[in-house]
Amino acid sequence: MKNTAIIIPARLGAKRFRNKPLVKINGIPMIIHVLNRAKESRVGEVFVATPDSEIIDIVKENGGQAILTKHDHPSGSDRVYEAYLKQLKDNVNLIINLQGDMPNIKPNSISKLEKLMRQNDCDIGTLASFIRNADEITDANIVKVLVDQELENDSFSNAKDFFRIKKNLKNEKIYHHIGIYAFTIVALTKYVKLSRSKFEIKRHLEQMRAMENNLVVKVGLSDSTPLGVDTKEDLKKVTKEMS
View (cartoon, rainbow, N blue to C red):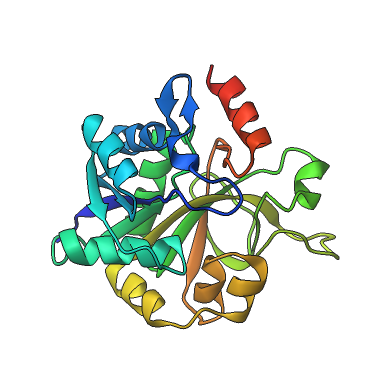
């Protein structure tokens, strides 16, 4: 069995930007933009996992599939796992957790990650792109990833660290991290049974739970940098880019 599913975790109660999934970009709710990009990747069935009935209704109105989850999850990946147990158990062996705040992610980035995971032996895969300017290094809203080997088009390099702001980065292989994760079912099951880790809490980065528990995380190169919408200013930027 080599089936893949994409699950998009989304909720209305994010502290930095409440009701974010339903904010409209060019007349379409952000969560629907993400849902459509996931469908266009053609890697497998797509679901939105959410505790909010408003999101469920919007997704269904737009021809999507949604799974109602409980409210209290420590991370998006924990929410994805609940959705997997409810709807997909024993039907897939690879789950892609696509964050619901990247409305301009390219479908070929999603399909590339799925291909890299099928071709390589690791627990978790993710994507990154080249850093375009020095401001990204000091922007705490942009997550960076440190890898062991420089990223090339078909490479899948080991992640060494994820961070928002860090000193002493001279000569390090640093890239702009993109909020998408592909888990083997074994890795996802292990991940959700682990306690929240020190740096997961300190940096507000769920991938640190995997890193601090020695799960193998590999990074592929994306040829584009989708904008993650964390603030109203981010929304303005992505709206301009997508108009």
